[in-house]
Length: 327
View 1: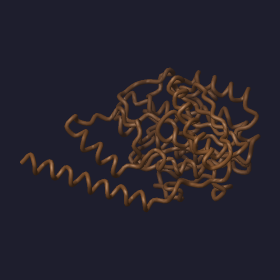
View 2 (view 1 turned 180 degrees about the vertical axis):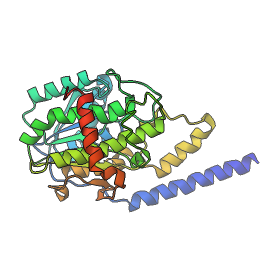
View 3 (view 1 turned 60 degrees about the vertical axis):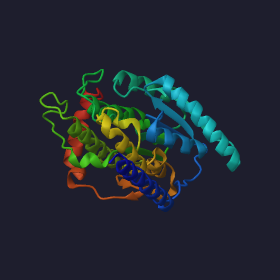
View 4 (view 1 turned 45 degrees about the vertical axis):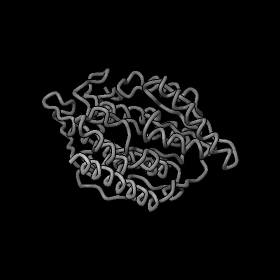
């Protein structure tokens, strides 16, 4: 029995490895965007996962990349690793890289968001791309420094304030872009204006989906408000990616080896998952395109609830009050 089980496990592993190789061979190469030389990009949550992968690629494309991260020590370590990696690749490709800058940004603190934006506005003459990437996934019920439910506070409200405070610089740098990382899980979310802070009831999966629906509605309303300014806004889903976003998801100990094998075989790598982010940040193909939703570098359809302009405007108005933009 033990030998049979081992044989099945090994055989399954070989089949999964073959599937992953075939999938990788069939998948398109890394998105080749235009040179980003002379352009400044801010990426939230750039020290790991999708954000780190996007930072490395945009740096390789000669951009000045500002990593907005909560944990400065981890961000500095990631920046050193990225510089070493991109430096070697840039030499192979001929030519130097861009510039990588670390700035402290805690999206669970409106005070930190304001301090980050104040420094950016003091130091940066332009901002060409803002990538709202950072997120928290299915955490236990917690509150931000300002008393908001953590997933809604970080994934939506923190980025809402960040973007609004940087809008003037984005407009002055036009043509410029805002890229909002959402998730297909938005489909399971609803905007309950009677309980945005989840004080009546809390379901960690539902609240994550709601925050991702809020991301899309925010991007849609922002795109409407920015028509004619030269600033475009688009949202995206990266697919299922192997990142540390699922650190709050409990997997039984005995199931972890199988989960790790399946995720290795079928989930995207961070670089694969970051392709649509990089595409929307850099490609001339989407110049002037705004208010759309993308997956795998292609425009995709949204459910009606993610295109409800009345809900989007109401969410915007309430968010302005929640973050202190309006009294």
